[in-house]
Length: 158
Image: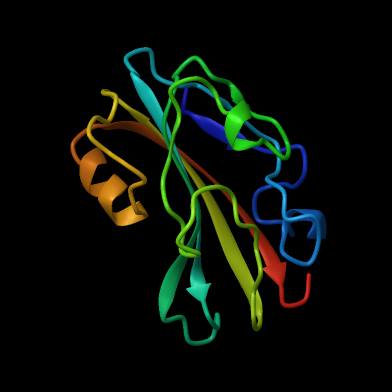
């Protein structure tokens, strides 16, 4: 069974509700997953926007949320999860606002795509301290057992 990543807040490819972005409450949506491989030792969750700043002329991928070493038996995260409510052992990486934690969609122009990416790893990641997405991806190399993606969109002003 493949690993899946879903949310009761929006379907894959659909618009993410305003309350999850900078023009709303800027809270994380509930995320649920299933099918984590039996050999997984940890999970990684990354939320990013490859359409920054303009989907017609993207220049970078903006990183909104970086979590690692989530326990593999975890089945998801609740809406508006606070850092202190993350599963025990979960590490937080630095987003492109140069802080840890969730930073919701906030497109300056056009309709952007936001990718929630879940990775199952065959190891726990050691020696990381507030890693960037790039540092985390480097540490994950050769350890990914499975991945799942949930993509939602947000237009400017939503």
